Picture 1 (cartoon, rainbow, N blue to C red):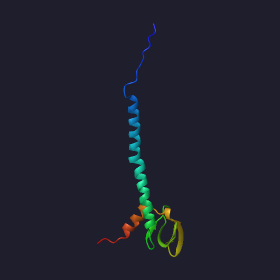
Picture 2 (spheres, helix red, strand yellow):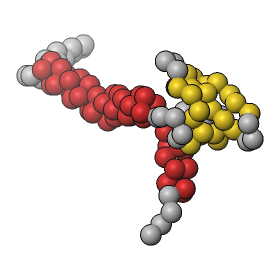
Picture 3 (spheres, one colour):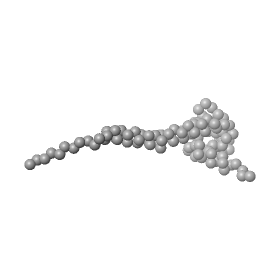
Picture 4 (cartoon, rainbow, N blue to C red):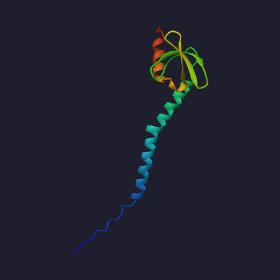
Length: 107
């Protein structure tokens, strides 16, 4: 004798999958995409706000002082009178902020 059991889908099973998929997308957005775009906006704002005379650190680790500002690049002065032209995107926001915080005398 051969018995075949017919299974029926649980009620609301399709809706539950859609809700879980939407929940995963929302969590992914708030924990991954949104913080990354916020960080990118802050970095762009920092790079545009750098002015002549500011000390900076590049992403390659070069420390220098801004001597000239162009549209897409800066000219920095490093050790002595050596000048290097770098792109605005090559500035490390975290390291530059730490460098400038270390230079501020404490009262």
